[in-house]
Length: 322
Length: 312
View 1: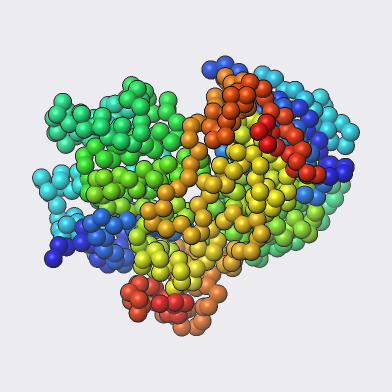
View 2: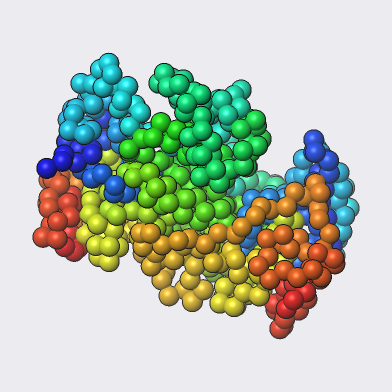
């Protein structure tokens, strides 16, 4: 993993809440390798959406603490002035949201918005040129009759088509890093499969670095090169996708995989679950964050936070029992 | 012979010019579990609402215990409303935020004029049975976790000891770590209380762990109905096949790339003549574009709406 696009070091993000300070991300260290498709998996409360929001510096006003460093081209994104981080959004970093209606403006045509998305990077290009690029990109993501559809408003597209428009918009920015937060969650399975195939194809073609945030291990296995497993604000395991899913190291990763319902399930089969609940991150317990639900826990696990240690060249896991 | 618990006969539910359910027929035997599968807009929620009497068919009938539910009145209607319960998708949104869980569980008893003091021990037993702590009775819906809220919704549906339970997306939005517990619980409750289930979902795998038979909907029509085993071994309708293939699976070797459908779901207010699946079907021909396939039995007993079924 030479020359990563982005280096995250010891990142901690805390929020003020009614119940005290929520330590939503704690000491996260990660490299995003250039050109790779990285899947970030974890359940609700794992901090995966906060990680995306931190990269884009779109953090809510109740931010209590922001520590560590995110290094991009030699600069620490966390200490850049707001104007500079804003300049990076939409030019170097782009986001594909779960619900495209939150990202597309309902009162402007798709054409108008696709032109504006490109403007930041191409301030002097003619409107006709930018529209022509938009038409080509819409065709590329599978929108029929794209030149005519430029004049349509977001509500005139179906859910699957809007998500294609959103992907086209993100790609038109030619960003170095594309972050997709649950991009297919709102879509039906047959449409989801189409969007996943499209994302894989476009990633192979364009080669930008992509971060896919998802709770679906199935989706991540279909799409990603690398996997990051988050649990209650900490990275518990990272590595190449196939290795993680074939041979998971961390007990949480193993438990999560066991919860996947196989294609041979039949009526009456008992399904696996993970007993207990995700810990309250306003009162982070000492020791390993997974200790309360871990089937392999020993008393020492409740004393010291396990370090993320290397197991082979690309694999790391945070479990003191490995 | 006992009549089936539910018999839907050629029923249509229309909202203005758009029919959400089109000439659907389905029988449900007491004690069985039907998985009703379809994508958004397929009409599966309207079908479920029709079974519990919340949507009225504009044509056709729904029989419960042999009686047309549209003709029920007085005590028979009250009994139907006890016998048939619905578990809603978003339990927090479907429960009044201003009532404690305890009051929410007592409310159905009150509505049906059941003596609360007599029925309460049974309610407490139910709370234990769905693995909720008794302390939850004093809490409000927003104070409980997503998994607990589902259990409250289940307990509330069972307070009146129904015979048919219709569950709309029973595990949607839950983390996988708690989803299995909920599915196991529903299976146990079915056995303990002799329930009949209609489970509505777009997630094939979750329903597969519970259903005896599947009913697959596409644009308002039941396009394939049959035993789970037959349908998963060899889907007969091209849409069923695509849906099974599209369901994401953990597959690190990538040996099962999802089969893709081309095209889009047409606008239900502006359908072409012929088969409703024609715009996405890989096997479509001129006959499919001209003539709408009727529901027809295959040799193995499945009912399929397709001129050229792939199996059976």
